[in-house]
Image (cartoon, rainbow, N blue to C red; front, side, top):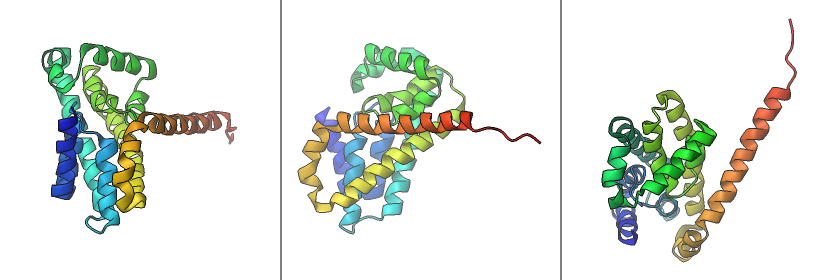
Length: 206
């Protein structure tokens, strides 16, 4: 797994936007590409003047959507058989599929948005959405919104750290679950508060 992550990281260093696009595409079809490392690295290259902030964001979002589309298609037309037969080659075990599927059962379409912030799971969620035959409109809307927040935040983080990113990455990798869990809780809380306020707002009558 570490070798695959290092290979994906090398893609960003050597091929810039294309490398980032390919890395995130692979990460969304089950490969352990590590978006939480790839995207900040691209952001750091923005700080050093090697890449453009806007193009990094567009490349990252493009990789998320293309990879998500491929994962969804495999799940929709290949079903669980594909995961059980080939998933072992990318660390996609039967237990993980069941866990993500149960998560979808609990949260419905909103699970796609939540999964955008969870390492490992984010690469499995498009496949599970395809298996569940989720409608394409909510799938793309939640994927686009979650990916924009996730990638945008990591690009800005890498840009802010700049040349210091290499010394921060080990700590970021060590604490990534705690950091992303906190971001997820905050995001879900904001969404729930917005929904509660929307319900409590009195409607004007003609």
